[in-house]
Amino acid sequence: MGTEPSVGTDDGVEVDHRRAARYVAPVFVVGLVNLVILLGWGLNPLWAFAILPPVLFLSGIGWVAFGHGFHERPGESDSNR
Image (cartoon, rainbow, N blue to C red):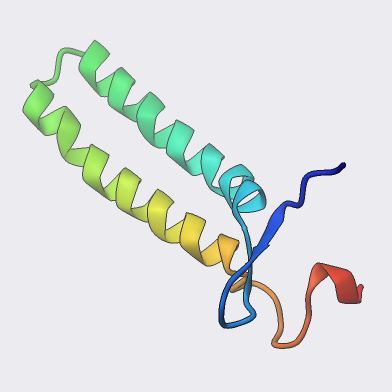
């Protein structure tokens, strides 16, 4: 009884959420660390939290893109290698 990392969708596209999270996690963590550093320097919290929406947006877009395999050639998947 193994776990399946890919989830099939109705249109036949496989989504790999775990791999996408692994690829996007460093960008997300670096963004949060920058937020903590800015707050630690005593910057006004309003300005420090101004970087949070772009970090979350780019992490979300990256997660969707990597999850749906934008980096693979058409017709190529992990099972074809």
